Length: 258
Image (tube, rainbow, N blue to C red; front, side):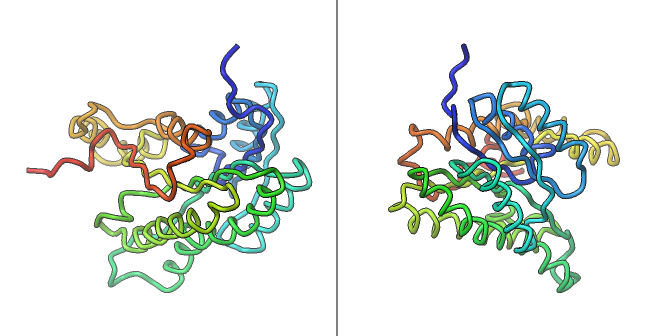
């Protein structure tokens, strides 16, 4: 029987209908967790993830909620409390944004990006903490981006939101340590998702091979690579890792293009 470090644990993964969020939700379920799947647009994808989790013998349900809206955050956590009665693991994965040069960024795009990518963590954490405290503690892991530390083309709004998310990770890690809640973040580089494959097809079809060739590990990270690190951060073995931003990119950001 496979090891199940999350047996009888309750997890919420935002943006888990596809991509990295889906891989994280499935990894936690494979480890024994019951999972709340969150989505905004594609209900069919979310329900497919729910069915996969249930096929593993775990409980799961889907909630449509836009974490950029505080009323939807309340709706999401109310559903978790009603269905599962508590929470052990919160994965803050949902992200969005408007990519434009700084001088072309609009107020609406800026606010939308900050609300989904940064503000959501703060107010979701406020709802998660009582549910975790009632069960003796828990884990919060957010998904960041290299743009939180480095300058990327047309990425000013998303980059600033991810920098804020990383700062929040550090502040929450300190403030929640006394409640036995471990807070960290994972920063993947380019990840080989369906979205990236579609983007590559619109270009010259060489985006993924070229990025892989420039990665010391010899390939891009997969959603499953990211999910494995996230899952580790939600185990007692990672208890002394606090407020850290763990880069999962095969060494891509270590090199300087010549």
